Length: 606
Image (cartoon, rainbow, N blue to C red; front, side):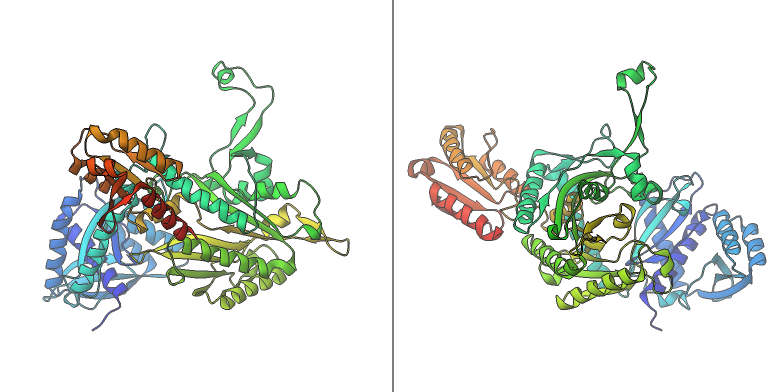
């Protein structure tokens, strides 16, 4: 029988639990679902030190269970009998889940037991299923256990940390091997590994978790991206604004973040005295409550509110590369893709109703231009249209007229601009519908980047109005828009997309000059000065290393061009050029090389 791959993965999670219990009888079981490409199970090993090298033993046991052709038998029990049965097995996590299900109104629970060919029960687990009919129906060579990780029970940091065992599974050995190759390539491109090798960024325990430090090469990469971003915004009619990193508590109460976003914000700070005064136990005479900002939106609203607006002033397009701070849980942090301080490439467009459609189209075109500039064509972009739940409209801010208008205009724009989009009901936030743009990199992985969304919440809370052509107060429309999402995540994407071998215009170091010996350093300095004057990012390797090692070091840093300087080059006022990507070697005069580099940069950017 051909089972859906999700059923196979779920069944493997069940078999993994059976294998673990057979080797470690005292282990307690938690949950074991299937997820995209993967399956996992959470265990409490009760003080047993379980390491990744133990996975081979578990995998071997799982294959043995599969070969035994065990039967998966489903049965149901009334809720109270089910709880009594689980109590007798001392499965404390299953018991807690069962009691929670009873509180939610469940009247019976589903179980699966495994039976041998002699009808001997070998394992039982509370599980909704579905599972395969017999274990032999799973290809024993189509799965592999991969790693272990920590996972809090019920995803709550106040609960115990369990051990999660991950595995991946596919319909065939061929598909598994294909995925293993994908993982190997992904490991090579991992931005955390490349970030260290290429000396782009680092982390320090003394600085704090989730707070990246950008090294000179990484800061230069950032600068190229940010310079391009700013120039593109100027050309597209945006005005720049700047806002502080902290703001008074009153702002966050008005915006609503104090209540509905509190789980992602850092605790407030009372500001009324210096650190020295506090250390000396001097009592503050008066103080204000400030918070680190988790987003820029309310600040831009306050700029809007600073003076009355007329209908003639619209649209207003305000952008900012604003650093924000969010309290991400320790276990959620991951390289540059999940950090605690990051820079949003934020913009807010405040406009009239009759301008909404045109502004949406402008933003979509801008997003597509930005993606294309960094090497992503339209075929790599997937768009998701988030709509409200049509059966539960009461939970959303704004009125039906505004929701109908904005949802319809978003879909109209998506269709007219021939975006590859999927409409998803129930995915809208309570205060806006939106378009999410996800990028597919060279490995086929999707990355959440650009977002284009309406906001009904802030215009209402802050009473954002303007004087229309009838001299009446009218509510503004407000669009939130981010192109990268955050600089950190987008740079992580670029590092992995290009495997650290950036196009010339982005490369932190575009040229490495390698003099064969100290005798030629003087000429190398002259070539260096000419390149620098031309705006080319260049460095000299004047170390005492051998020529081969110098070239090798430059290649490890993925520098696009290596210039080797020897006696011949000095006499002819030329350079010997080595192209990192093509491995081609050529000769050119210094001026010819500079001209070719500048042309390559200009052609790429334009």
